[in-house]
Image (cartoon, rainbow, N blue to C red; front, side, top):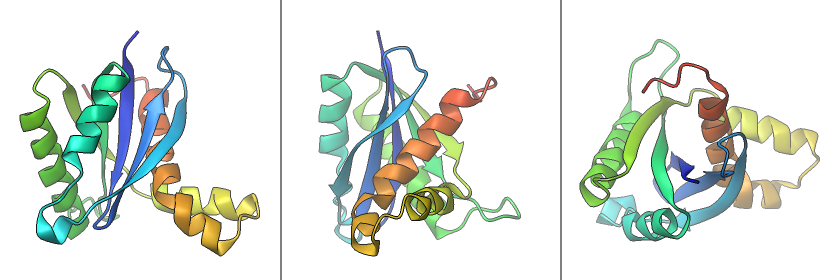
Length: 143
């Protein structure tokens, strides 16, 4: 069965989450170190994860402002998704509104009483889980 990958794209890291084979739940997979200022977006690593896990769809979080406009972070996600489309033409790439996903991940980690140091290490992966789970739970997936 094919799986779906969820990505939370930042300037220094990309949080990665993977669906189960049925597409019901999202699990945090890893956090990739990137250097967007120097053009290293970690596309090779995403490609490897995609092939190793039979991924047919990638959901890239699209951060929007509360007024629905797209800022610098959103432009970065759009650019990242286009790089993925060029590298992985057989994989469906979707942008998914991720407003408040990082805040939700932070709140969950705080409620679990995770230390600040540990939160910093897993926040991007957890945000990717929120993005992917939001996509999986939505009956109208914007496809």
